[in-house]
Length: 441
Figure 1 (cartoon, helix red, strand yellow):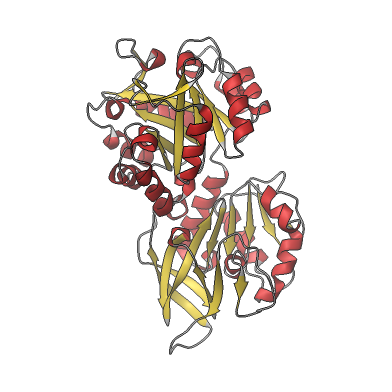
Figure 2 (tube, one colour; figure 1 turned 135 degrees about the vertical axis):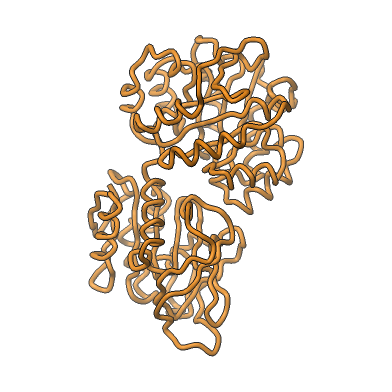
């Protein structure tokens, strides 16, 4: 269910709603909302001039309301400009401030407004533009354009009089200067991508370790304890068909320095377009992260690199966006210490130090796992989760020891945003539907 914010007659609510319906979404026009409760996504369409931004803010519940919105938000045309701090169009009007920067009148010997088709250059990869070619044409209708302070906020740029940001992202807010609802096939593809973003998370996240082209489980990550469970591609298709939107995949060959399963990532991403892939294992360089994202991963997960090369993690977060780079913090022992290099070495970091390091690197979320509980069937380490949640408000997925839907429910009640499930799904003692009934992240 996608909510479309209707701030008056100046908006293009009807055409946007029709485009989303054509892409298969259920939509509802709303005048006010509080944290987008009850909806899987929100669209803020163009609404005339920047002077109307206060109406948007009021409809979202004020500044406090904006902070409560955790679902994906797509802002179109002036909706995108509203994300910024200010605009020359209405100097006394304060923007939403979700993205640092300002909106200025297009400068150059060109006719204003820009009305018609123009090329969009993709500056960095993002799931919103999956399957859309660099240089694709979209339909524009604007006299003003946005100029973010940070390059990291820019997804796409366009030339018209001057180069400006034509697509941006700040956390769960995406903005496009063009009108996807008027942009033919490319626009419909973008809308479909956004719908998939809105349906890409269940509280239970299936996990798959792969080694030598097969799905495998190891107890506490130890070589010699392998149990194989068949084709990773077949399992991924099963999870997608069942209704899962996100899968956590660990390349164990890369973890142990014995090769890479990146070709398998490409196959799974192509065969399962509705399944977002969280790719982990051996992501210890900028090039490795970029390759995984280019091969279809929604996000990459770093662990060892946090300790050995934090500057690389910072660069990845800046270049790809924080939501596309998460940290895996794996702990063992009493008191718990962070483990790296396939859980073979201790980084001598406690929970507080490790989480502080991850936050300083600009990651979008954390996977907190207990090495001691992994694959043992003894239950999750909830005390570790409680301590982690007390230290940070960042998104957290709990991993290690999940035995049943009740364990996932307990993790959610203690502050986790979801839980990663491995062996319990392989064992098939619990029907898939029971995991799916836990709801969305």
